[in-house]
Image 1 (tube, rainbow, N blue to C red):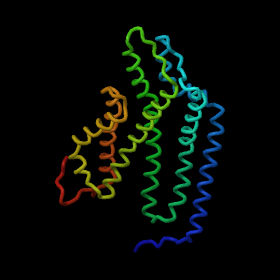
Image 2: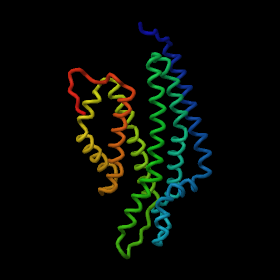
Image 3: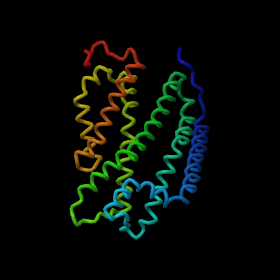
Length: 252
C-alpha cells in the first residue's frame, strides 16, 4: 500500500518557497561578493590555456574591443562561478522543498541521481578546461597564417570558453539520462543498444552545432558523448536487472 504523503496548506508552501529562494539568493550574493575581489585573477586563470599558447608566438596579451568589456567580462565570469560554487547548496534547498512531496522509494532513487548528476557536471567542466580547451586552442594557434598576429578579444574568449565548458558539463549527464530512460521503462537497454549507430551520428551532429566548425573540435565533444552513452548502458546493466521488455528483441 502506498505511503500517505503529508499535506500542507498552499500558504505554507508559498512561505517555505519564499524562504528557500531568499536563502539561495543570499548564498549567491555572498559567494559573488567574495569572488569579486579576485575577479581579475579568476579571468586570467580561465584564459591560461590560451595565453600559455600565445606567449611563444608573441601575442600573449588579450585585448578588449568594447569600452565596458574590462568591467563586464570579469563581472560575467564572477556571476557564473558564484552559481557553480553555490550549485550544491541551491540543489539542497530545491531538494528540501520537493522531498516532502515524494514517496520514500522515490527519494532513495532521486538522491544518488542528484549527487551523480552534480559530480558528473563538475567533471565535464574540469575535463573541458584541463583537456579540451588546451587542445582546441592549440589547434587554432597552430594554423595561424604567416604574418598574422592573434590577439583574441576577452569577451569572445569568455563566451567561447563558457560555451565549451557548459556543453561538456551537460554532455557528462548522458549516463544519468540513459539510466533514467531505462529505469523508467521508457525504453529497454536492448533497444538503446541496438540504436548505437544512430547515437554515434547524433553525437557528431550535436558536436557540429555546439563546437567550432572543424572536425577536430567536433570529435572532442562527440567521442566523449558516445563513450558516456556506453557508460550509461553499463550502469543500467549492473543496477537494473529486469530492464528488457518481453516484446522486444535483444539488440546486443
